[in-house]
Length: 326
Length: 113
Image (cartoon, rainbow over all chains, first blue to last red; front, side):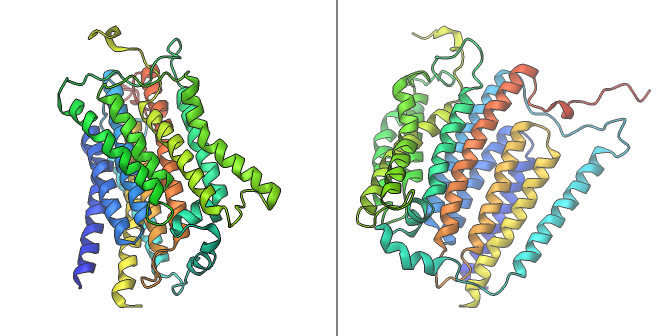
């Protein structure tokens, strides 16, 4: 067994063990921590699969933002005393005990994994997939990062719909606001100690994060990176600033905020419709392609940053103790 | 194509299949809704790994960019759904007092005797 293969096998076993710990861990907070660990390990796996763009997205979104979202929700549930529950207890009306239920479920899941494994082992001989088609036509998009070319050139329709999906998801989250709280600032009020770790990092990290975000969106046309990775990093900067107490996030009724959320999809759609007059919908003229893709990416990453940050902040909630500190 | 290259993607594809099974087990056996959301994310991640690994079957050609682009789209959609699910769970817990679905509540006691 070569060293590389040994690393792959060890990483995959670790992934499976951490995934299991995240799913069946003893308490919910432990599960969340294991899930964040899992996200970072998956990012390493993506680098081993030479998918650096996916690794960046997974580290920023899968481990980072999802982790922050889960911890925030856990805190909210704890405040409402909706804490962890033991597994399903025995139901006197059900002849099968709960342990037997669980074991049968486990066997069925093993069968599913076995079936998938069988299908993988019986795949037809390696094909080249869509690699030749992409590399033959990449020149027309003007970008040299093939993933960005696919996202904003060949499969632009998917990406347009996706940018609309995240805006709609944010509207759906806002729709769950409790009565009477509409218009308040979103998220729990944070109690960061002055000059504590969080407040200090809240001052040190945002400039670094913003530089990384700008680099990721700018480099995205030639190197790994792009609107989604950059938007997530910038969103994390916004979140950190709000969490460290360095500024109240604008209320959800603020028109500037709403404009920021829809700007990305709107610019994307406008460029797509303009393309319809010259060729077909979303078809970018090769001469202008790189400029237009960069324009879409810059505006889109701003919208993604604001949308993801507000998704993690959540619905507007009652201020705790009516701002007792000030 | 070298032998190590074949095994390389295969290891990750099989791990993806295993992760899907692990996630599904958690999704079916856990009652707390936040745990189910974690399990849902684990299943999704397993599917992405399986998909991404099968897009990397020839190490000399490199990774297929089309699955990569679709996976990035999937990761972003997954966090949108997770955020919506988290908001729904928090609201359900506020209304009902527990982060559970009604059919998963404690079975009525005292029917044994």
